[in-house]
Image (cartoon, rainbow, N blue to C red; front, side, top):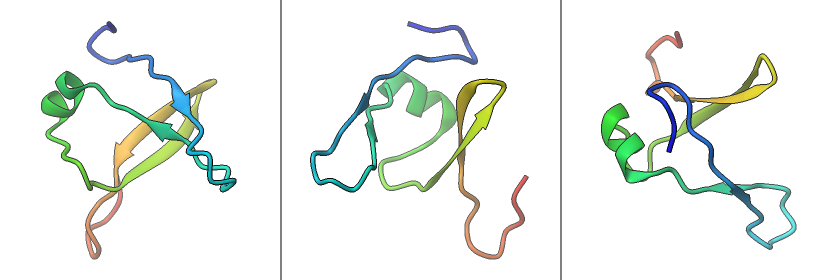
Length: 63
């Protein structure tokens, strides 16, 4: 589906008028990153692409 550092996913409209988007991340990717359902993520635009990072727990400095 993607190389080790790049994945393509489809943004879905939740249909609630919020302007939010739903992104289904592949299980293989979640396993590789150690992310679980309920983790909070940070979305950033980097060189024309979107990047997701795990949000650090409260009290822990961001990278």
